[in-house]
Length: 447
Image (cartoon, rainbow, N blue to C red; front, side, top):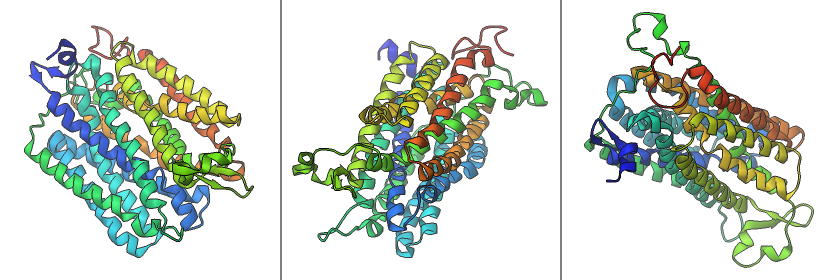
């Protein structure tokens, strides 16, 4: 085993590579589920004749599940340990996936939203447990790099999710009629089977319960309010930053297909032939535009950019301060969203894909920065950060409202403002935490 691997995955002399790999599989799972959610909006817009703001109820139901279950998940994780919390989350996801079978027969918007919420409730367990767990599977100074590396698996799942969504949500029969209403349940039933098997694997596997570093001595102060995580400004603003980041992410992911089918300039007729035929369709103007299925395929390309950002980010964060990298990426993402807002043709289209790249490291890095130094209370703190994911339920409706009133390009002003706050948090973290970077605090370095 190389020294670089030891620095990343060995703690107290124990090799944790296999444990890390097993936990990383959970990131792929919820990336796949989230990827399918992100191409579902357009399906309901067409099947149920919904506006952009109305179809955002899909995101509301998804992130409501996170909001409702984050604190119970943190409570259970504290009592059951990492292993018990993971198994509980997997079984909840399985129940939500199986619900889509009767939901397809009910064929009502509320039934699908209930399934979305149930799956998200299970994912809340997994995120509340798995995110902080990756930060303790090795030395604390590499916490941001480890969580970003694990989140690279999330990027793989997010790349595959839109492909499955495009296949089952936007499929057509021989006469060209949509079959999405009849086949939407298939990928979710498949997820249910996989997670039940994964739950069995975790039940049999060794998943040690490792305590986070208590740099602020919050465990010593458990008897009074000074031990509260809310006394730590780097944690408080992490909750706010995560709320706004997920809001921006959910908005961009949700309306990606709408952007690609309505804002991308028309393409030459020669592009709509051969194997690329399904990627394009004639619009009301008689010109060739990207089709719904084509946009779903491009969503997978966008998630490849997201994945590349995660992989390169994990490498960068081994050498560069996590908070400075987060601040830089926040500034760059605010700028590319501004270019999309300005509607500069293909330049703006390219900036949508760049946005995926620059947002890639934000969730895991905010997470690692937020729970830094909180000891055994990291599990409770992580529940509040996961709870902040509810931002994804609220602000996409604002972005959808702007898109309905003007167009979806103008809606990018909403994530632009969100990324600006993320940049502020990253650039201010050292002052807020009293630490120069992730890693054990020097004597006198805390508040």
